[in-house]
Image (cartoon, helix red, strand yellow):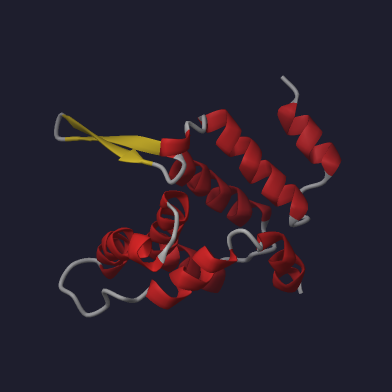
Length: 148
């Protein structure tokens, strides 16, 4: 299966992935959104577990978004290009950050890679490269998307 073929390429991120699996429901049962509360807890305890700042942010992102990933995997057709494009677009926002305006105030949400200076264009390239590696798009489709 696809997951088995992807795991060898995740050697550098495997520890963060395992910690995210361990912590994904750490705040379940609290009155607030357990995904958001869990991400805050992950940001606090991951450095004590020896994770780098980048891995800590990756774990926090995975914990905070585990319900989105679960819902997508369980309720959407993963072979449908629209599902992949929707999730990939969501992922690019979460990599670089986004802004929301509500009641006259702008709130900035930093992305997982914000501290690394990754641009939106670079994040979109990462998402496209991942889609290519996973076989969701072909080299020709990638080249067509990169053409002006």
